[in-house]
Length: 185
Image 1: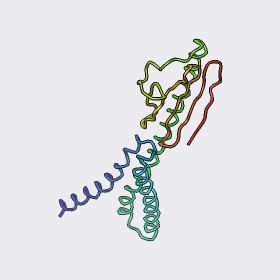
Image 2 (image 1 turned 45 degrees about the horizontal axis):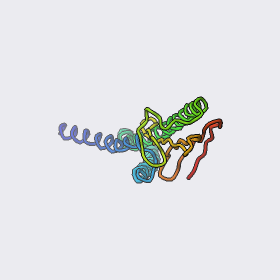
Image 3 (image 1 turned 60 degrees about the vertical axis):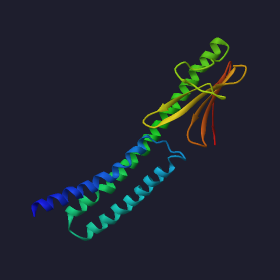
Image 4 (image 1 turned 90 degrees about the horizontal axis):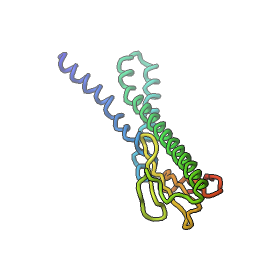
């Protein structure tokens, strides 16, 4: 009888702890159309967990069974905690990526002003084709794509931070210009 109780107890704890761990990959996923289904599932789990804790607290206030209530709120509490941490991680990563793009724009601006021409590419970044000459990834746990490009006379540059599929943050500069920031959908 004690062995069965112990197995049930361990299994119950596993069922309380394992499901919220599914949220952990969100720490590294920027909010985008491709990852939207995962974020939607996490947000639904967050609201269900908030509702579940509220319901269990009300039930606890009506009864005196403290042990079952404490064990039963572990899963929703972990879900809420992990979702808050995932959202914070993505926000932190985005702010680091924005800072990286801006600092790179300042560096390129000084190169443009000192050489009277903007550099063809950034040596430490990966070469790319198309209208942007090179690209890099920036952020914290979640990574955002940062692209660098020039106009034809190499007097103006653009640094693009891809926030998601439809939103971009641009930094513009060039020879004798001030760095400008623009957000576009």
